[in-house]
Length: 123
Image (cartoon, rainbow, N blue to C red; front, side, top):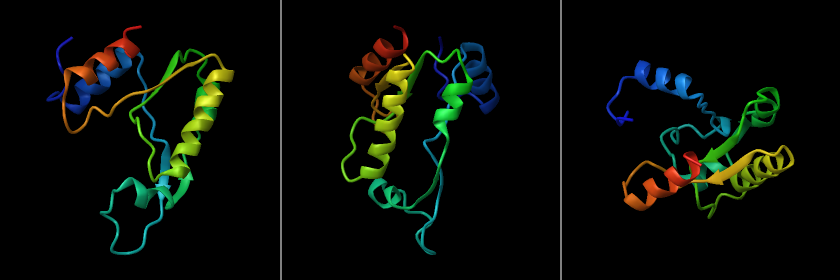
């Protein structure tokens, strides 16, 4: 398939629907002090989570889910996020859903990352 890197939002949504791929953020909302709204470091965000998205209900209600993939490989300085991901992992194991941690596709492209993604997605 051609890259969707420069595709429009509409094209990306059409692809996701066609391939039956869904996306959800682990975090629903954060509360940060005034003046820190543009601070995105994981260690800062980790203890500012006001509400988590209910991934468990979503996974329970969509019976066709085959796998859950997180675009994160390391959890240094983010114990709350790590704990939440561990809970999702346990849920997946109990529900017979494949679970994998993938390197983020953002920042630096590499063939190694691409191979990891292909191995996990193209089972």
